[in-house]
Length: 148
Image (tube, rainbow, N blue to C red):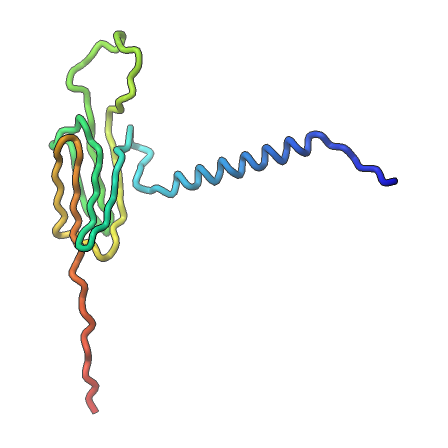
């Protein structure tokens, strides 16, 4: 008859290690979204759609004035930043819950080489910012004659 050593804490250690692995995988997955920046107070939700001739980005920006939105394009990176501020100072003592984010936001999007940075257009309607990024015309391969 062989003796087995019973170690009750091994099961707990295995569960702890598995939980740590799962949590690390989830954090790594969230960090893969480089469009959100830690210096922001909040990040607007966005939808990105690719069509045949363009890319379209929709950003939810309710309560953000058009003058408070800045969109820039540099080195293949589209940056959307702005600020949502209070309309007026309110007495917060009367509030029971405040969920609407205030402050600055900042999102960055890496655009593919097919994006035409010179023709980007943006418009805001009903609290939704729409950014249209046309695709460049595909260059056709050119046949080069070989001379003898």
